[in-house]
Image (cartoon, rainbow, N blue to C red; front, top):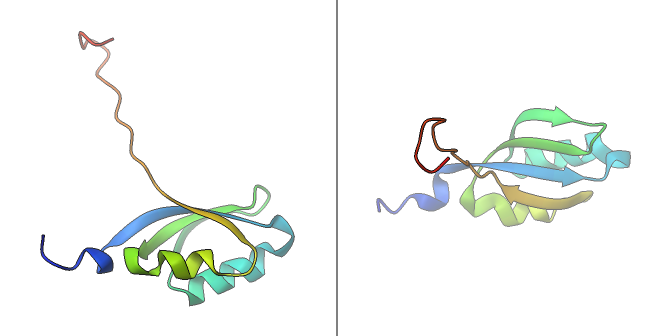
Length: 82
């Protein structure tokens, strides 16, 4: 490890109260989130933030949850696992 894991950006998906979506997005930006996608009707958005700022995102008014993005890789179609 290089000692900078707390400063490496990670992908997150944030669920917010749709009734205060824009206010929550602004608060999330102030807390360090770089927004990459917004879904206001669903009350979700995605973005990147350093690992050490995730707790700050969770504390923003209107935020219901903050989840780290997960990458799932499926086996190739001709794989014996299929």
